[in-house]
Image (cartoon, one colour):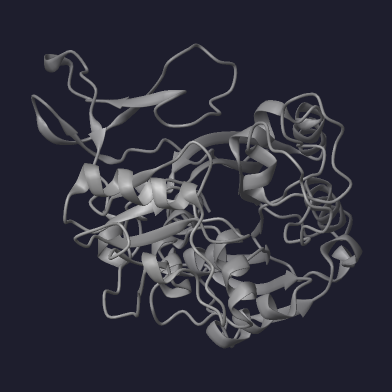
Amino acid sequence: MITTDAPTSIHLFAGGCGDLAGFKEAGFQPLLGANHAPPAIATLRANFPGVRGVLENIHTLDMRRLPRARVLVGSPICKEASPSGGRAAPKAQLTLDEADEENKENLPADWSLTRATAWDLLRATEAAIDAGRPFDVVAGENVPGFGLSWLLFDTWLDGFYRLGYIPHLTSVDAAHIDAGDEGRAPQHRHRMLFVFVRKGLPAPDLRPRPLSACPNCGPVRGVQRWEKGTRRKIGIYGTSYKYVCPNRRCGHLEAVPITRPIGDCIDFSLPTRRVGDGKAGKTFRPYVDETRRKIDLGRAKYGDKPFIAIMRRNCVAQSLDEPIGTITAEGSHHMLVIPGDSLDNCRIRMLSTTEKARAQRFPDHHRFQGTDTERTRLIGNAVPPNVGTWLGQRLAAVL
């Protein structure tokens, strides 16, 4: 049922409907979601029965048939936004995290097409204008590398400008955004948000102000301060920008954003297995030396406290008292370790799909459809709902 006073939205979404859930929580009335993957559309229908689901490749979607809406939401990824290192652009489209990871080797040739491309958002915007029902706002997210390394990024921005839209960009970390009922995500997920506002409409306030701890003033709303003067505010927290106290009296000291620990998401009732028993299967397969090394280093650092061993290059282990690194769409990288009296007696398991969804800030009642692999892909490709809510709230304020 469409309410007359709620701003409407269309979602060319990827993953498990995180942006759709966030915008709905922000007071929007989503009308339609489109995706090429059956599990994604099944997830939409399971959670949003009043929203029309369109199962189709975004590249071939007839944009002229999209309904009238105030906002178009889509998080694109382009094969042109290739990893650094001078290699040719890969033939297959990359997921968000692969596109932004430096020095990525041996990229597979069959990455799933899970994002509307940047050009498809332009195509949809132009079609709406031609039909006499332009969107007021076009919005979405991407990795920082999309704006920093894609050679056609300026051309893409100029396309929207020529269609009558003013671009606005901001950078956020999902671990800092305390919007919506679920609050901050216990996961560091650095993203660039883009908002194109139709000329004549007010600009939204896209300045992130996370609840932070100032050593002098206590809890404050931190102000983003960039390390270097840049033409565009695109980057990663801790490398490109930090937060400072808004109060002059303390000299704008650095204020560290308050985060949520991944330990809040862990279900300790789930079964584990001994390191010494090896991987699950009919025959004994020991864990590789690198996995054992990371577990052992975690034991030395955290003692008898459970921790997360990180199965990524240049990563070892982290405490359950802090957010984890980015949940990705392909594979599992976070191993729960419950220390024992020896390395072989440590009990381990990978994070479950439910725990990954919690890390993405999805509520437990959000139902993902498909196989375990498909659900992992839906979760990893999703916009965290708290980020979607934060963005939706700022757009609703000017609509």
